[in-house]
Image 1 (cartoon, one colour):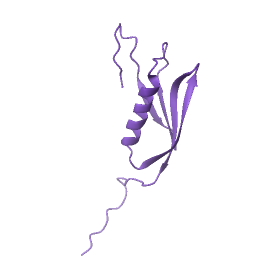
Image 2: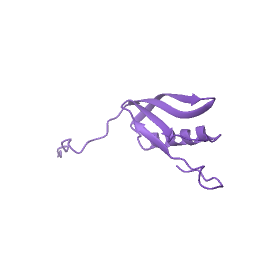
Image 3: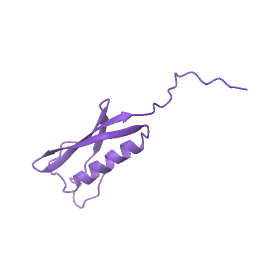
Image 4: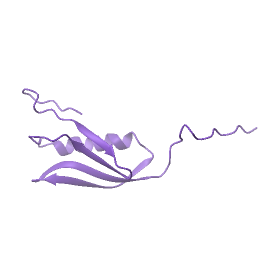
Length: 95
């Protein structure tokens, strides 16, 4: 996700999502300047991450901040339906 700012490109940043096994970390690269609306971009990235994984249910989310600015989101989740894997046996046809 790359927001558009005027200037020499120094306002661009990348948002990363890392599945930590039971929780996900949404964060950016180290930023020299933290945009005022960074929390909205992080929230949108977290929503997109869960939309791509409908079998997961978010249990709780915690903002990680510094100097009054939200820099990361950590969200814990449950898995209520496991997707099939390629190694799972195919169901037998019934007559």
